[in-house]
Image (cartoon, rainbow, N blue to C red; front, side, top):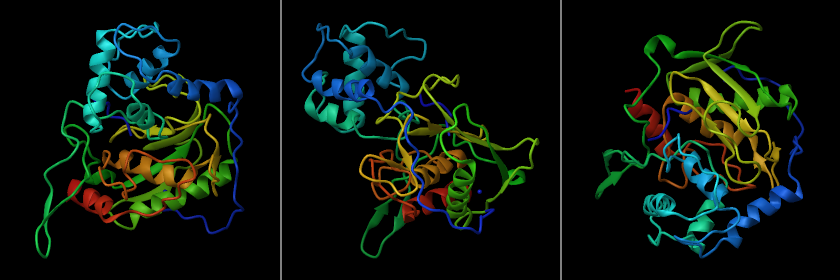
Length: 302
């Protein structure tokens, strides 16, 4: 079961493209990433170095019970079942093995909000087309949590466990990201005064940071946010962040727009053009809302 994981105060100044050097983008992390490929073909009964990391990846996305201990590299029946569920969810051939297509899917950088495996990922949203019925791809968290009308003006602040980028840069990026949602919804956003409480808290964290959803270093889980009315939005400090990303960097604003969608109550969309699509490949710049994103926020708060 997916956890209830998930600014229009615009800063009127420009900034030069900012590159945040990843603190831990070292050879051992690259080797850890490549180890997924080295496990191709592993199946039930095998013991392969690194399988515990695959188990942890699946657990982070909701395919194992949260209290499961995943310390061994043995491919057991529980892992086979979890892998089959993952393959079915992503419409892959259900083999129960770490085949090439499954590994390829796992290696795509993505949002860390767990997959909604126990509930439909798509709602039955139909809207009339000229010649047929068009089915929307947006979805919501279980029980459709949302902010009450009394909280349509949301405040935010920044608090990080790890210093990754200049706070002025982060504030500017997030201001633009929040404005995207303010322009198409009833929400307004404002930075909270220093020392005061806020509805939303944004920051950079590394590894296991105490929220039950540990980050995994570079190249897989980029960030996550919690559903209303939690308000937490965490960037993975170990990614290579940029305001003008190259092929091996992640765009700060693209991820911010996506995670803010979670903060407002939207789940992942099946529309690959939507900002709420789960995958955000390196070098991708997607700083706009698709019609599916707009329809989703309107449907949730209609």
